[in-house]
Length: 276
Image (tube, rainbow, N blue to C red; front, top):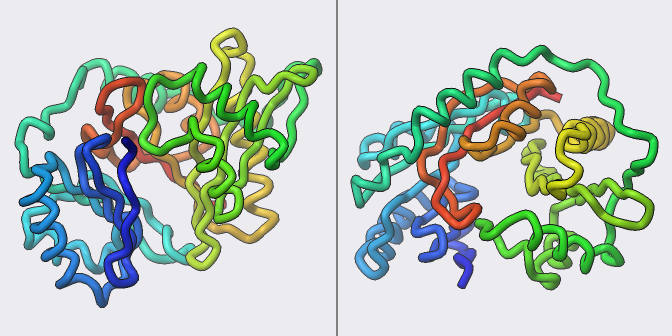
């Protein structure tokens, strides 16, 4: 059901009908000619409606020359120095039309006006932990309660275990023994960046600053291990997540349009970033 990951040379792509797209997650520049050939083959076979790529800025012209448009960027992304560009191509033009664009613009306007927080505290009845494999069942249960759909198979215990073995660190907030909030750091140690992602808070506990608290914990941990840049892809229609990142001093640098299957629909994602 979910989209699959595939190596093309040393470059990593994800593609499938779940998100109805091809997503270049990690580019090895030597693969550029064969990647464009692969894109054509996949489009011919599967009729995907979008291609989105995440590439160093110095290669963006090669994609623009192939019909891509830059939708967002993150400065100081690779090694704390080099800019990353999100570029997109729409084989089906209707995919480019933003759903609820006015609402998304209103949410962004509200978020950008929020005052930065220097410290975050939560109710003393809550505690946090760095999560491990003993928590996986609680994690998938929480994700199922919060999300109808998600771009990656976070509802599956094997997937969570695999990501823990690879490059993700999960943090959780508990009330007594009950897991009520969760988030993750998807880390690229070699290039010194991290995606702050997979936030899920039980509805009963929203408004308790749990996302803010988790983000502060994640930032502190990433700073300790030497990661230089943090970014996120926040749902454009989510007041809570856009406000959270704005309050924590992240900068907005664009919207990746109709990009991922979340909450049962294809949604646009706002890009926020911060130097750590």
